[in-house]
Length: 149
Image 1 (cartoon, rainbow, N blue to C red):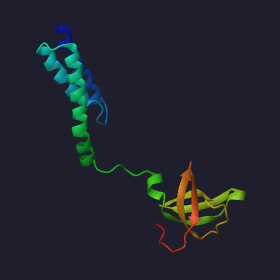
Image 2 (image 1 turned 90 degrees about the vertical axis):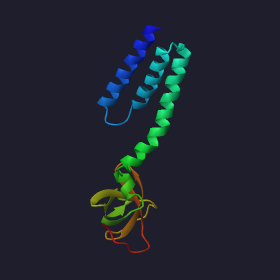
Image 3 (image 1 turned 180 degrees about the vertical axis):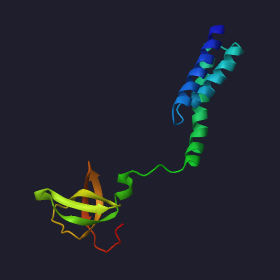
């Protein structure tokens, strides 16, 4: 039975080192599970009990701490896609899908653009960004005037 004590000690060290080597929370829950299993091994519980404790305590630690971590770390940083979809931009180069031309200025950058409906959109028009495919924005003309940032 003493080999199981060494196994769980090794697991604690291994999961601890992996946790220390990574930027995010990756294996700290397994450290808690391995500690529970180590205690069971010291108390001469069977291997099945130790494994069950490892899994249950790891899962419980994950379930309890993950929401807390998300709350304290705040919102994820928005990507380009998150920031501009649904946003309004200004056409800087006439959008013509047939001639593969068009550019839109939105969120401080100029993007290659295509008309979502397929029609020509003249330079200077305001457009709403509908979707992104690769590095191309697909846009529709805006009905109302909105300040472009």
